[in-house]
Image (tube, rainbow, N blue to C red; front, side):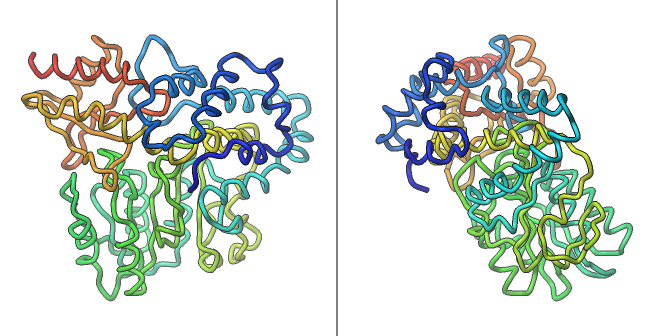
Length: 431
């Protein structure tokens, strides 16, 4: 993607005019200051801007995060910026003025423009995008909708997300499909190794491979395109769990070479909690049964996957403001900043005795998410110590080969926040 262009961004605001958006009479100081910062940063490379704390301070002011705590668990769910919160509240108030009218006849009319906008940043056709509530719902739509038979094989890894593992196990129990497990040694900076682990598991009976784009436990990025190409050469379909990749770093869904892709929008896109997206390649839509019944379940219309009944329209429509905010910051800038933050704290602690890192510092193998452990200390004890003593919120990981703390900053995180983490890790390693 090209660098952020201020005029192009203003052109994408739709019904909200540039004049209204920039009006200093109606906009709070934090918003005016951010606009000025973006204007002055317009011609600066994203890599140069990544460490500019003055610029990112104005981004931080777009959020309402607690000043009493340092949130380093954005990998679970991210807070939304003020503009998204305000849009959601405004739409909610509108709905309560006359629910059946404003929900079905007004807000629901915004779905197609929203679909177009999501497709734009995903690099797909709008006819391949369905709006869901989270990655689990999107991915399980495919997992339970695929026409698999007893004996058909599915390749997946022990490092995949538990909800997806359980969904596949349910298909195993219910339909007799055979699950073929691989066990990845992570972190890894060897694309050939990572790809080969999947390819070695393929057999003539393999119908689907399930690949997690970013392993949620430690932030490992997998070489999805290489795995997908190898799978397609053998007639195997590819389902990608993109819960932690979409809007964290730059890529388009078609560039992954997958057939199906599911993500949450309340993580890295910073949309409201309870928003997600499903992608299905156009020619693959018809055979997939929707998770919720539809009058034409074999239709090739992507909208058949949105028959969820009554749902919170005010949350769904606020996704549009999250996309505006994402466009305003710029995909390249965001990726570079997240890389910078992860490597900032990891670089500072990597040589401390007893400290072990479980995430690559190379951009092709990791972005925002990092994992750390301290020899002789339980992850749960470290999580408690960080919170109780330093007021840092993280999450302890104990899953398969992963034992440590997952550290996940976001664009509102400052290096001052991470300096507290660095000091804490150093003191805990000595204790």
